[in-house]
Length: 113
Image 1 (cartoon, rainbow, N blue to C red):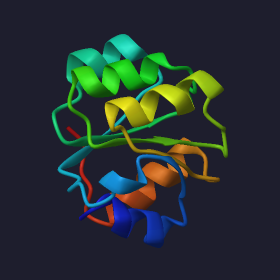
Image 2 (cartoon, rainbow, N blue to C red):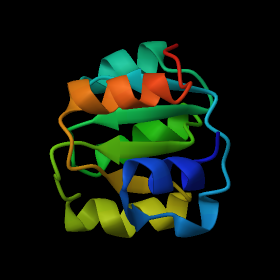
Image 3 (cartoon, rainbow, N blue to C red):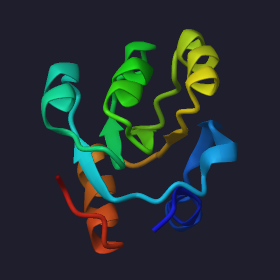
Image 4 (tube, one colour):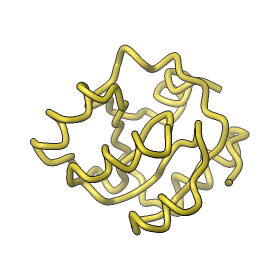
């Protein structure tokens, strides 16, 4: 499944990276602890988090993640919005809480790492 398909099915608000929505999601990872994501997420994963600071972009680049979804309608920091396009990291926002969003992703066929 591509990010574009998820944006449509889950009514996500694309904040950055609209040119990369053709990326294929190969798995998912949900965590708010950056060190946990660095240690356990896999290349191509879609990351679900409530973190909004620019370090999420650095972690996504380091792990070659396909994108980031912020939960609870949390808006990314301005620094994050500026850094993400340069690194070509799509950031999307969901109104859903993390638990509900991960359940929806799972129902759509996105499994965990």
